[in-house]
Length: 244
Image (cartoon, rainbow, N blue to C red; front, side, top):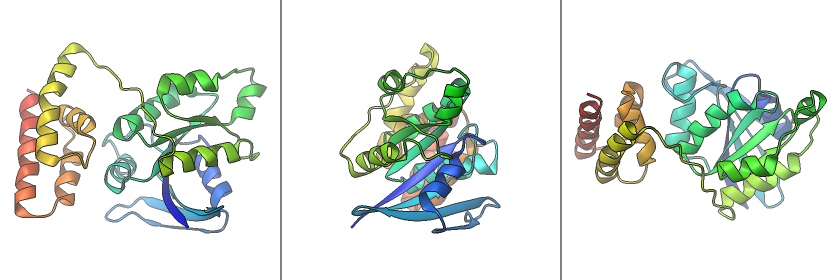
């Protein structure tokens, strides 16, 4: 039996929790994230020879450190490294929702984009070119209606293919202005040298440039040993220097 962990990410009101409930039914429970006053929902289901453990991350508009919800969602993807992260988008608000998808794609390549409420979009006369979006983003894209259980099998197929490694997505990499890209070119080798490849080095470098103190604290808290903590402090120091 294969076991896969799947994180569900998305803006509030995209139907993410409806999808979670559709997939897990009564096989779920809710509790607090360690050290945070943020609820987590976890459930599982079996499909064929595979068991899927589903984590319903808090609904957020970004994965920076503006709130406890954002920190929890961010830290789960970075540190727990789920086998696949499904980013749930609202088909009627794609432009706004894609911001979160692009952020997740900077953190991991194991992504499936799930465009929910496709029936509502059709009712409003909105036409969505799923194939073109997938081509541009470089990850599998599936259209569903979680409420009416449309497209669920398609989504499950893509989830399992990415989780198992049968599909290896190549997400679109956002290019920033020349000044930021120069800083990233300086920082990324330092991050890779000091922390290895356990974390996405380009994304860590971006957060260092952004002065994300919360992430830096999370990284240090996850690293064991005096030497490793000293290395983390050095990386933080490089980041702070690069910001000025």
